[in-house]
Image: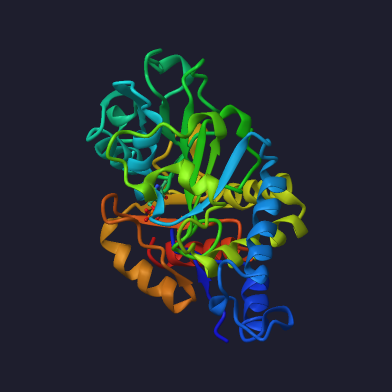
Length: 360
Ligand SMILES: *Cc1c(COP(=O)(O)O)cnc(C)c1O
């Protein structure tokens, strides 16, 4: 098999061990004679797969008992409307932190249902940083406070949790969930599409505090009601069974690696390697404020953008794939999620060095 390193922002790299296990179990899961894809979601085999995945996720994130874990579909995009539909609960407004393209999308969608207060924004510096606690304007009548803890496109990560008093915190953690420990008890809702740091596309994970659910807006579709999914153990409709199975294998892999604290250590090591090289080089540049540099998605530019195409082409020839930055920001972006081995980062830096030398 060709050895490549896949720096895609999502769908993204998965642990080789997980893919190998899925391959081994593809035709016959644990002597059932069936592939997981063929199983009834209500059969005892799949029920055990889903229950174990939930238990392992609860253990990894130390999710308190008064939180529901939901395995949904529709991506983080559906959460942009599901959150206001479930959490407004008669209130007229919600606070949103504006830190980039994903928070903007969440804001635009929420604006269809309520008044959105921008509680803080980094638009003034083209979304290259995140506001700090002192800069937040929290409205105590807001139904909730929404933020995007890692802006996947901009490469801006927040390593602290906003303090919002009694206003429930809602966080889009799509692109860094499971990359480091987080204190779930500080949040009302955490949501994440699986295809960045959890598993295949098609699965969306929602962690929600029980007391927040059950009071939806008039007209909320049944499928958009958290309570319906909670009451039915995420099996109100047919869930993304294969995605849940792979996510479950990823959770086991994370446990075997020592859990999220160990994962954080490795992620710091990987990101530091790349940022140190970017900072030392005058050929490449990281536009992001040092305290907000994402450990998962690392955008960078070449000093001469006319070399971008050659860089991408030669990177590809060297087995370094999907390094093109998002079309809205340009430049390059290396996504180095949990499953990216440190060897991938080392190979990228070695290539960047030789490319810089050849084009100095
Ligand atoms: C990828 C991403 C989304 C969108 O996810 P979909 O599953 O495509 O809806 C939303 N927010 C963040 C932070 C993301 O990284």
